Image 1 (tube, helix red, strand yellow):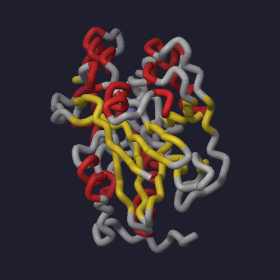
Image 2 (tube, protein in one colour):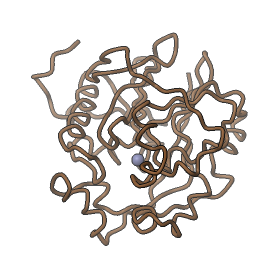
Image 3 (spheres, helix red, strand yellow):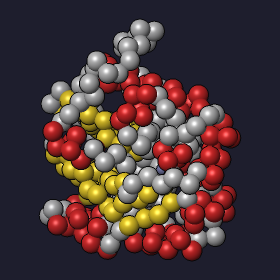
Length: 286
Ligand SMILES: [Zn+2]
């Protein structure tokens, strides 16, 4: 199995989105009063070259996001900015690696925010999996009110609902295998969005955690700091603790979408340092 990080342009957001301050609505409104931008952060998509076929996790940004500055939506217009060129979209980058769109067996989306679903147009013939609740939250006018861009989905977009019905996987309450071998597993990581999923890849004794936006970087996960967009502090905090538990239990390479260190961490197979992650004695090993 081979795992690749593909950077599909970059994004910058307000610092209060990366690390929320306070709790609840105050934390979420903080994005709109914060004047401080992050540096440009990468938006990664992930490619798993598996013996059962290629799996792509998230599709990254598309050039249509360059129009965000004219959006009617206050968040999209004022609180986020994108950089992306056509050759940086996932399709051309896969082709450069010798992977054609028809070679991709499945696309799995951690959630439907526009910097994760922006490359969907490159996969018209691929099975696309999205958690059922996420799809409901993102579609239609209410989806647009929530800051999703369903009107930018390809007209053919009709994903297969991903139901995590296989029960717990380690510290995660719900999961579903994505390969027959059981070495690629979608796990429920609610927080950043209510039905957010992450993808776990087990390879030669190391667990690679394709985190999506569970946190914006590894430090924030270890510190248990909830971001500025999660709806529920307790739910998001519990997901961060579950990831800490996983990293305590087994060598885990933590790979958030926007962490500038993710690609280097994957390359070096750098695991979360167990002495840094907090011990959690109340959690019983399965
Ligand atoms: Zn997101």
